[in-house]
Length: 508
Image (tube, rainbow, N blue to C red; front, side, top):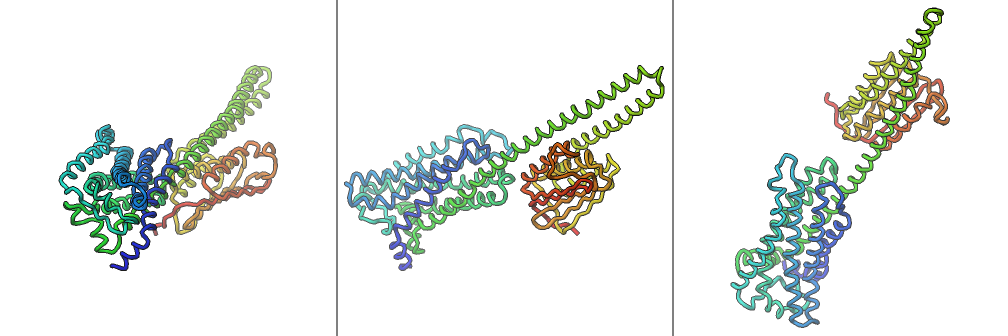
C-alpha cells in the first residue's frame, strides 16, 4: 500500500481541494436554486443544507490552507485558526442536523398526528446538541495529557504545524471525536431519513428522475454518516484509538478524506439533480394557470351560448305563443301554423340543452384510461343523437395517463364531439385509437358539413365552433401533443392527435 499512499501524498493539494469543493459547490448550488415560496416539503429545509455545505466546505479547506500559512504566521494565530476550524466542524454538523429536523417536520405523513413533528422543542435539538458538544469536549479534554499531538497523517501537512498542534492538540482531537459522534453521525442519518420521507411525498409530482435522485442522496448520506461519524482523528481513548483516519490510511493506503469526498460528491450530484423538482413545480403551476384560463373561457362560452342562443330562443317562442293566443279565434289556421313553428323551435332548444348537458357530464368522468375516456364520451354522443359511430383500437400497449393528461384529453374529446353534435350535422363518425410503446394517437373523422380552415372564424358554421377549435389547440399544447385538423366545406372533418404517454402491455 506504500505506493498508493505515496500517490495521494503527491496529489495531496488536489485531494484536499476537491474534498472541500464538493460540499461548497453543493451548498452554493442549493442556496441559488432553493425557492422559499415553494409549497414543496423540501423548500424551507434546503436553506439549512446550503449553509451546511458552505460551512463544511470552508472547514475542510482549512486542512489545506492552515498548514500552508503556518510557515508565515505567528504561532498564536495558527493556534487560533485551528480552534476556528474546530468550531466550524460542529457548526456545520449542527446545520446539517437542523436540516434533518426541519425535513422530518415538513415531511410529516398526512396520517401522522402533529404531536411529534409539530413540537417546537424538536427544532431546538441541534442547538441543545451543540451545547452538549461544548460540555463534553471541555470535560474530556481535561482528561487527555497536556501536549498531546493528534496525528491526522503526514500527507495533510504542507508545513510543520507540530508546535501549534502541541498547544491545542487535546481539544482538537477530543472536539473532532465528539463532534462526529454527537452531531455528524445523527445529522447525516436524520438527513437520510428525511429525504426518504420527502421522496414519498413529492414522488408523484417529481417523476422518476427526481425521486431517484432523492433516493440516491438518502443512501449517500447513510454512507457519509458512517465515514464521518465513526472515523475521527486519532485520539488516546476508544473508539478513536482503535478506528481513526490513520488506521484507514495504514490499512487501505487511501486517506479517509478520499472516501468522504466520494460520498460528498454523490450527495452533491444527487441533491443538485433533485433541484429540478422546483422547475417541475413551476411548470405545474403554469399548466394549472392555463387550465384555469381554459375553464374560465369554457364557462364564458357556455354562458354566452345560453344567453345568445337558448334563452333568446325560449323568449322568441314565448312571443309566438302570445301571438297565437290572440289569433286563436279569428285565424285558427294561422294559429296552428304558428304553434307548429313554436314546437319545432322548442325541439331545437331541447337539442341545444341536451348538447350542453353532454358537455358538462363528459367533464365529470374520472377514468385515467385514454381509451375509456374516449369510449365514455362517445357513448354520451351516441345516447343523444342518431349519429352512426364506429370505434376501433390498435396496438399491444395500453396508455396510462397522469391526472393532468386525463383531464386535458377528456376536454379535447368532449370539445371535438361537441362540435360534431352542434355544427357538423354528421351522419357517421369514425374513431380510431392506436398506441405504441411511447405515444397514443386518436383520430376522429366525421362526414359532416366541414369548414374552410383558412377562412375567417366569423364565416360559415365554424363561426360558433371556432372557440372550440382554439380550446382543442390550447389543450394539445398542454399535452405536448401533435395536432392535425383537416377539413373542407361539404367533405367532413378529420382530427388527429398524437401525444406522449406511459404505457403498459395489454393482458391477453
